[in-house]
Image (cartoon, rainbow, N blue to C red; front, top):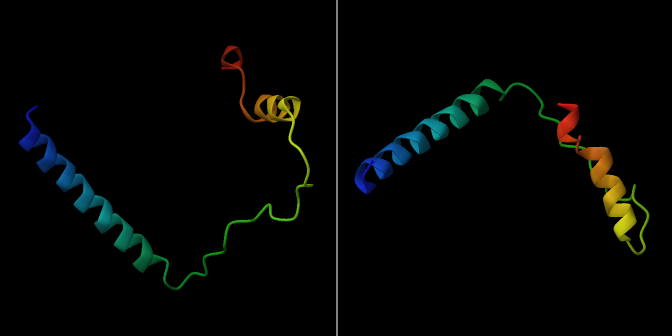
Length: 67
């Protein structure tokens, strides 16, 4: 695929995404959109250790063997 064709395809995809965004906003204008929950204030301050990071990663990301 040459650069011109690639840029045309990218422009078309961008236009489609913008149309989808408009449709989503117009369909939800009568619905109340709740903000995402925040973790501000729920985490204690202090130094973060490597062990804390490793533990958090292990609890968030499953091992590939589990899939």
